[in-house]
Image (cartoon, rainbow over all chains, first blue to last red; front, side, top):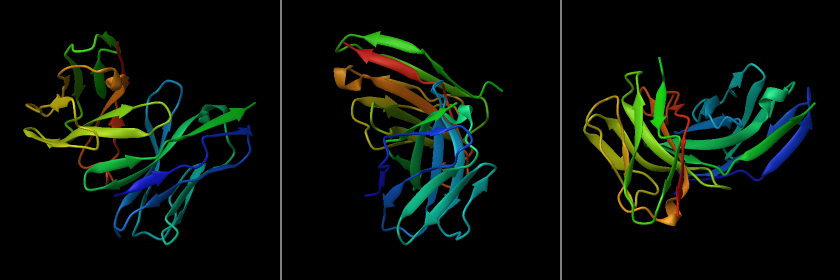
Length: 112
Length: 115
């Protein structure tokens, strides 16, 4: 069975700093997708970035980028130039066979 | 587009009561799903549907029923509510499977308390 682990329950950084959130997963599959979702205080779940396992190039979306290490089963999220609006819960998710398996989340607080 | 809508936003039930959480989407998405979110845990998939008339169980299906008679609607039924079902429930939809390149869109959630 697939599992997703986020080892940092909470992190806080100053505005404009760079922060990296960790995610590790366990699977015996070779082709799958990985996702980072953001849940701000409004509770609305929003897709941040996604990565296809067979692509070696790390995905990037504006200030958000990932460091995907397939052999290590690691999928970290880097947020550059952090903004107050980045304050949220961040969830890592593993996708396979119509189902997403989610990590427990990291609460990220951006301080002014 | 309204996106994914859920009703009600809040609900309090007594143990043993039944109720239906409503979910609708207006994006003509084939895939719809129900998750529950508990404190300190990630989302857990309850049931999902890949199209009208087709449903399947997720990670935690016990105590819940679903049906998909139309593309737009995907109601979740609690047959006999238990305190362990106290949670926040999210409905989500995507054009196709969300485990590939399709973005999944979430509703605003329903906070359910079972006394």
